[in-house]
Length: 91
Image (cartoon, rainbow, N blue to C red; front, top):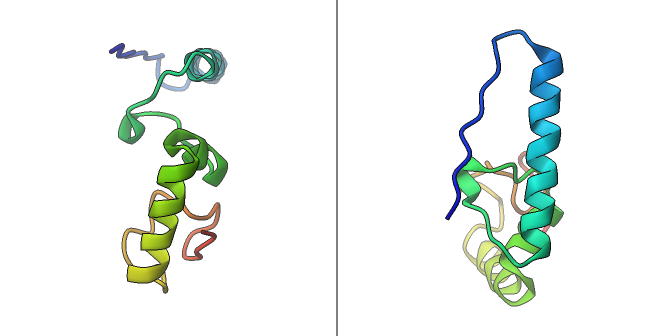
């Protein structure tokens, strides 16, 4: 396991952009070699990233359970795992 705790001075947008770009590059390399991320503290940003994180079989099972037990997307609207838009299900 690897944990990164990075910070920048408040208001330093240039440093923040550089750190975020570096984090994304590290995440891409880690994912490329089969690594996984701890999603509550990572940069999981999109529906497609969630699908890739869980893999096809687990994602299928999660999507089926979501449709069965929460067809109206009432439970846990965030993070937007099943859609890139709040309040709508895109499983």
